[in-house]
Image (cartoon, rainbow, N blue to C red; front, side, top):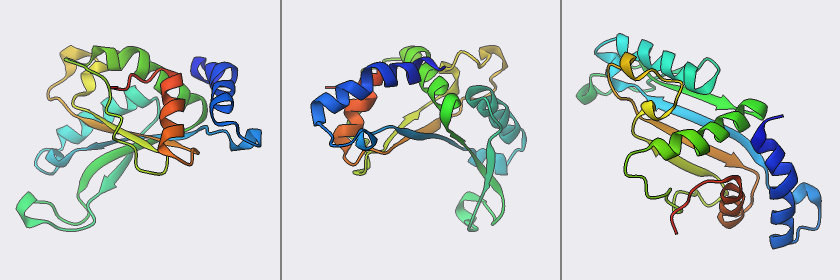
Length: 179
């Protein structure tokens, strides 16, 4: 079993139930999925950017990403409808908990000048989004093989009804929020 899933069952469930006193155990919030996305707009100019981002995203997430295509043509950005402009991965179950564990305990501490995650990035429905400016904070990525730094967005989708419940759950998992 993934370490964070074990922590969820042993500590987080009881702590959330104690703080919010839910009427049913099914009402206690849980993690639904983690979505990792990466915009690769430079791939329009040179295809090697997409290949490198695809390889890095596969190593970070542990599964193959889906290639996203442009919905509209935008002449200012030299993008045509159907051009490959991004990648995304949806993690659920064991892979989700293993990714969260690596993110919280290995990647976030390696971020330069880190002062905590912003507590204002909740969407009002219990989901949290954050961004990383470079993929090199993950230990799976070989620093010598990186040609260009690539950022990514990470969204944590929960079943929590409010942002406060979701923040408390993520804090109990070990997310380092700013106070």
